[in-house]
Amino acid sequence: MDKDFVKGAKERLSFGELYQKSLALAHYLNETLGTKKEIILISPNSVFFLICYLGILKSGNVCIPLNPEIEQSNFDFIKNLSSPDLAFVTNNIKQRINTGHIPVISDSIEFENLIRHQVAPEVKQKFNEDQTAEIIFTSGSTGEPKGVVISHRNITSNTDSIISYLKLNEEDTMLVVLPFYYCYGLSLVHTHMRVGGSIVLNNSFIFLGSVINDLKKFDCTGFAGVPSHFQILLRKSDSFKTTAFPALRYVTQAGGKLHNIFINEFIQSFPEIRFFVMYGQTEATARLSYLPPELLPEKIGSCGKGIPGVDLRVVNENGIPVKSGETGEIIASGQNIMQCYYKDEKSTRQTLRNGWLYTGDLATVDEEGYIYLTARKKEIIKVGGRRISPKEIEEVIVSMPEVIDCSIEAVYDDILGETMKATVFVKVMGGNVSPASVTIESIKLWCAGRLASYKIPQIIELKDKIAITATGKRVKK
Image (cartoon, rainbow, N blue to C red; front, side, top):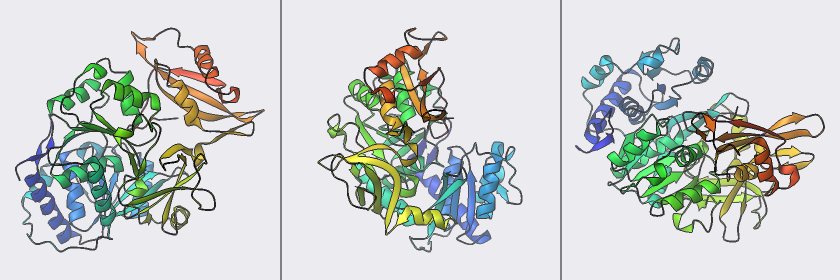
């Protein structure tokens, strides 16, 4: 197939080339390692990543994709936990990370020769769909990475569901700013490959002009982002909201709750573009729920209902579904739910109970069953005995037009035990916060008119630069 799967200014790759090269790599891995071996993959979004990722999965081995910016200590932890037999690592990362005794194949002429000289068999032996396909590491509550074990069935199930509700087809082209070691980013690969669509790789979101140019130049029909992506595009770019994107038919948002003010801002600026609010977890392969765009703004603030094939509920401490207005924990069941946490039976037992994934996310439901996220269990702050959700306060502060983002955290207080600190990120013009009226006092006055007194942050810090991780999520500390 000559159609390009990967489009972009720097790299292109057709479906036919991806198929042949990944199959050749799979044959090499079968000949040298066999199957069910764990293989590390460290690479930015690239053709190299895609060939390696698919080659590992096609060979019946297990892919462990890692953040290209991973620290040596975290790499060592994962390496010692998983005992991988091989690592695919780009040359520049290879210079920084000591892989120890693990054999390494890098993006070099040797790699190209390796896959060029393989004679890939036409008939491939099928393997059990419940066989492990990948282990995706996320930050654990202890600070140590936690491995989420995903099967081939998990991937195909979640992929089919996402294609179904987004109505994807071969005409779709997705601009990818999300990294592939992140489940949201990988879902873009799975879905667009499945329908015969295309992806455009953009590893430079910090340069907003390049994002806007790529959306137009490659006639992208879709864009996927986490909250900070939309906040930065809407509040930091001078041209995004005034630019026409005739090919763009939809955008998706997941990876955290985007404040209502930004959703409204987007749909008012681009009423013709369908805005999908979504919710998911790595433990669910990627996606758990979505809100149909036609229900905005009526259901604004909701993450919707379960995607096709997923039973999503909000339950109390006894496992009974909550009534409208009550708060409970979101639980999920479906073929997209992970197998387990890697070599962590205790966490697995706590999270997977009686066939249900306990997400740790708190939410309410309305009378029609639509779910509204309130907070993570561990995010709730207690001030003077009162339980406060940071998201409620953040929502108020970001409604100030000059504010790009806000982070609420608990800090120690001699009297109250905990009090709240707000770190507020403001727009800068000509090196100065603009307008000058954005001050600590003006923020407190804004909150005073919209929040109970005990919910007003006692400490406020103004910043003009927002730090985000490679997945686009805000760095809170």
